[in-house]
Length: 84
Image 1 (cartoon, rainbow, N blue to C red):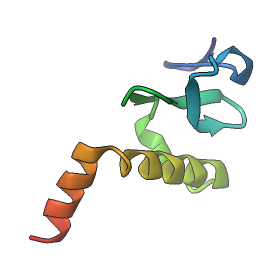
Image 2: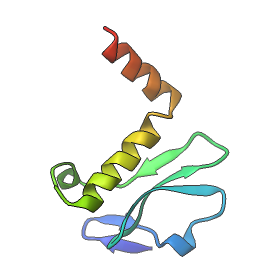
Image 3: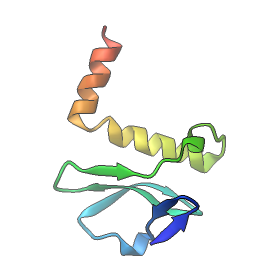
Image 4: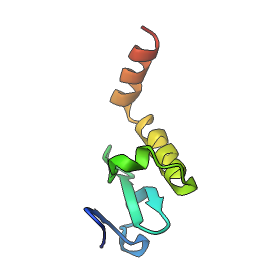
Protein backbone atom coordinates (compact mmCIF):
# COMPACT_ATOMS: atom_id res chain seq x y z
CA UNK A 1 0.00 0.00 0.00
CA UNK A 2 1.14 3.52 -0.64
CA UNK A 3 -0.38 6.87 0.11
CA UNK A 4 -1.26 9.73 -2.18
CA UNK A 5 -1.46 12.74 0.17
CA UNK A 6 -4.97 12.17 1.59
CA UNK A 7 -5.82 8.88 -0.17
CA UNK A 8 -4.65 5.29 -0.16
CA UNK A 9 -3.54 3.37 -3.20
CA UNK A 10 -2.03 -0.06 -3.82
CA UNK A 11 0.99 -1.30 -5.73
CA UNK A 12 0.23 -3.44 -8.80
CA UNK A 13 2.09 -6.43 -7.35
CA UNK A 14 -0.19 -6.60 -4.31
CA UNK A 15 -3.49 -6.98 -6.19
CA UNK A 16 -4.98 -10.53 -5.97
CA UNK A 17 -5.62 -12.41 -9.23
CA UNK A 18 -9.42 -12.26 -8.79
CA UNK A 19 -9.32 -8.45 -8.77
CA UNK A 20 -8.94 -6.36 -11.95
CA UNK A 21 -7.19 -3.02 -11.98
CA UNK A 22 -9.66 -0.52 -13.43
CA UNK A 23 -7.75 2.69 -12.73
CA UNK A 24 -4.12 3.57 -12.13
CA UNK A 25 -1.83 6.56 -12.15
CA UNK A 26 1.81 6.19 -13.10
CA UNK A 27 2.99 8.09 -10.05
CA UNK A 28 0.40 6.85 -7.54
CA UNK A 29 -0.15 3.15 -8.07
CA UNK A 30 -3.53 1.46 -8.34
CA UNK A 31 -6.44 3.83 -7.84
CA UNK A 32 -9.39 1.64 -8.91
CA UNK A 33 -10.22 -2.06 -8.73
CA UNK A 34 -13.07 -4.37 -9.62
CA UNK A 35 -13.72 -7.99 -8.70
CA UNK A 36 -13.88 -10.51 -11.57
CA UNK A 37 -16.64 -12.65 -10.01
CA UNK A 38 -18.63 -10.23 -7.88
CA UNK A 39 -20.14 -6.94 -9.01
CA UNK A 40 -17.82 -4.82 -6.92
CA UNK A 41 -15.95 -1.71 -8.06
CA UNK A 42 -14.09 0.84 -6.04
CA UNK A 43 -11.90 3.79 -6.86
CA UNK A 44 -10.05 6.61 -5.23
CA UNK A 45 -10.93 9.86 -6.93
CA UNK A 46 -9.80 13.21 -5.66
CA UNK A 47 -11.90 16.13 -6.82
CA UNK A 48 -9.04 17.89 -8.56
CA UNK A 49 -8.58 14.93 -10.92
CA UNK A 50 -11.77 16.02 -12.66
CA UNK A 51 -10.26 19.35 -13.64
CA UNK A 52 -6.63 18.36 -14.29
CA UNK A 53 -5.61 18.43 -17.93
CA UNK A 54 -2.77 15.89 -17.78
CA UNK A 55 -2.82 12.80 -19.95
CA UNK A 56 -2.80 10.47 -16.94
CA UNK A 57 -5.80 12.27 -15.42
CA UNK A 58 -7.71 12.00 -18.69
CA UNK A 59 -6.85 8.29 -18.94
CA UNK A 60 -8.01 7.66 -15.39
CA UNK A 61 -11.31 9.46 -15.99
CA UNK A 62 -11.87 7.42 -19.17
CA UNK A 63 -11.08 4.13 -17.43
CA UNK A 64 -13.38 4.90 -14.54
CA UNK A 65 -16.27 6.02 -16.73
CA UNK A 66 -15.93 2.91 -18.89
CA UNK A 67 -16.02 0.73 -15.77
CA UNK A 68 -19.01 2.57 -14.31
CA UNK A 69 -20.99 2.20 -17.53
CA UNK A 70 -20.73 -1.61 -17.22
CA UNK A 71 -22.59 -1.68 -13.89
CA UNK A 72 -26.27 -2.50 -14.60
CA UNK A 73 -27.79 0.08 -12.24
CA UNK A 74 -25.52 2.82 -13.59
CA UNK A 75 -26.30 1.73 -17.14
CA UNK A 76 -30.04 1.92 -16.40
CA UNK A 77 -29.72 5.33 -14.75
CA UNK A 78 -27.73 6.72 -17.68
CA UNK A 79 -30.27 5.32 -20.13
CA UNK A 80 -33.16 6.90 -18.24
CA UNK A 81 -31.38 10.27 -18.12
CA UNK A 82 -30.35 10.30 -21.75
CA UNK A 83 -33.75 9.18 -23.03
CA UNK A 84 -35.97 11.50 -21.01
